[in-house]
Length: 561
Image 1 (cartoon, rainbow, N blue to C red):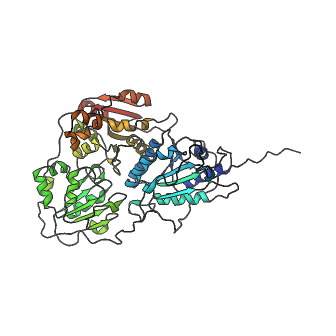
Image 2 (tube, rainbow, N blue to C red):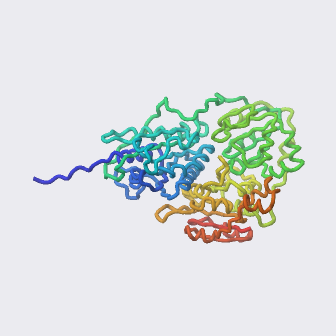
């Protein structure tokens, strides 16, 4: 009588993790960023199989990225999601962590994603209920740790032995839909607000792989009673057309998109567009608007504006904020993910640009024909001396149509705002910055994520403090996919942006120590430690020469002031 092998023993946590990963793939999640840990071990084993180029038959395909730092990992996921959206393929990206402080390190990226409207799935491993509140190692209150910054939070109970598949699939399906604003197309105008979602997944030991079978998972339909953040005060239906008998201005903030250009051109109004608006294009765009608004002529013109249309979320300059604050008539569309935070005095606030704003009904009267010409007559800015503005202009000149480029949210984004031209609509690069909360957190990791999503050479411009703040984001392990990315770093020895703010008038020694924060770091050594190619330049010609060829591999260009 022949001996028969015992059937493989299936562990509940391992089986549940396989269903989670299969459900992610079934619901359109292509990329997962994983951080190592024991409690998240079941997910790590499942993702290792799904992310392997030698996947067994029946195992779903996941593009897996592994990072050792949860904070950098979360911003990497954010960058991948932003890069995918920039390519016209919006989708959520998942990040997996173990329990304890690992979860807290996600918060900066979650805050940025919440305000920027970026779909993230936070899958955090946790202890089961019997180990909570009894002093168990690495156990804290993870459920609700992200506060109001997530669109949906579920504390998912651990799987029980013999539990049938299906529960993880439903949880993942609801999480994906909530992260995308309840829609898979045009999430910016969905009935819900896109953003991060948190699933806190409890796992009981044993946590190891068991060699069990993978479930067959299909996409689930939404449960009507489950909803995320709704646009409960949305303007239902199209608002009336914009006024005709006015001297109007269109302000395009971060994420405005091409609709801002179209609104400006239809109404023959000037367009004041921030560089990450996606609207710094066309004949109505005023590239030198900032210098104009700082002049006597510009201030006089601003006082004559009788209607202001704001599309996207402008955050860069006080001059624009003052213009918005004093607008006699104000209409706002798509004011960031939390668009309801638009100015309280707005006459109209809508989630996205309505069709009625994209057409002009009737013949305008009482309009000064020279209105647009007065604004366009503003001289474009120029930079003759080696400094942040000339570095920004040289960097911009090297970008080609459609190139994905990340800009640090401090001095560089303002230099780019001063120096960027008005491109032709089909010639503009795609500029991305973390303007949800306008912090310098995770900029390196965001840039790496954008480059990974691009699948093509990508670019970034940032300051030295921004680079150092996310130095851990430079780490791309030897077994991880390495994108073609060039970081151009403006090294001026600290946070010189504060020199243009009101703090600059204080005692110079105090300002240098607590604001400028000189660091003395050797960026060449830092780049070498993380395996990045490094080039140091200190002239415009040298910078232009380095930027003349597309980036290959991981490159850091240090522009020294």
